[in-house]
Image (cartoon, rainbow, N blue to C red; front, top):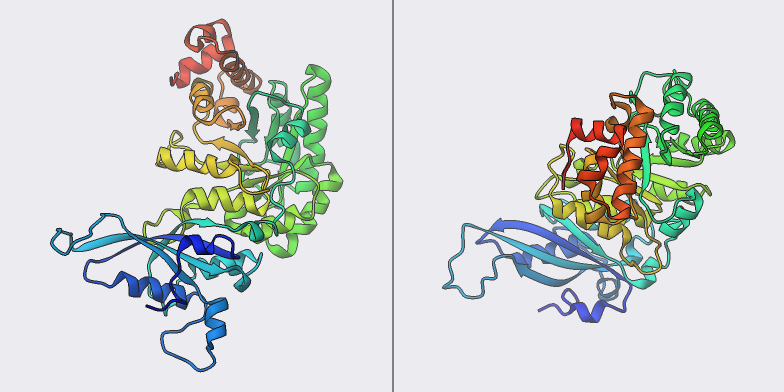
Length: 424
């Protein structure tokens, strides 16, 4: 046995190694130890053939180490029956010195699948040592900081996204913003499909929407914060940040699934505004069973590490066939203790309507953002009524009332429940 290539997990805990956990499926006849070893070496110092220059010191300091190999069917004896294929969970520790705080290099190192490894694996999770975590700032606000910033304590925040997604000018969007704002939402954001088209400059949107929000506040006393989409190429994104800030934006939205975690981290380090991280398109990374990474890692832990204050996530209830377990685990990755990294607030979108508010709060708690789109703007009584219905539902649930009975007392809410139903 190569004592440099293999190690006990306990021996690595106080060393600056990042531990990756993978799923792999192989023919039962294939040597899993050899496969894991090839992955550990190929993703760090090795190639498929021996080469000069690899010293014992390099192997000790910079080579990956195989920590564990688990058979998902816990076969121990040759006499125990197995199928033609066998699945495994393997853990490999990688020296953080190989990539530091560079997200692209880290993901390349953990999931590059160099041709020399010939391994089709899915990255399930990454465990970071304290020394490594200390190099990251993470979210600026944390959940408590966000509540102070938005002036909302205890209850879930309510968010709406302007619809239609594209094709409207800042002036047209401002009229929708005003109607929604009057109904009592806390946040309004751009749809992820609206960036910087010729007919809707982001800075002009900020100015128009802030004016609409001011008018709604003067009429109702409800203050609404606008988060503008700055998603773009690397060359333009910091300019987008500056223009949004100068125009008076309350927060920024960036789709990290397409810009990358490093861009999210770069933006987070160059603004004082809260950032809503969107995961639109993350299915490219998560939906493969033998490739990519798990959704709790892609949309949860890594987005939090990169500095998203709020993270838009999928649920099993809005048409996307996400497993409930993955939805709940993603929330856990955003809010559970994670070294000194502050929590990110989960923003739940897809299929959010008043009749399902009780379920969301029961499953995810009150430290969430409820992102309702069509349920607000598609309300038969208009978007102001749609927003009121959502707030009425939140208030009933937070008071612990009998939702099925109490909703009947509010015309806006009763109409929503009649149309979209009640999910206990």
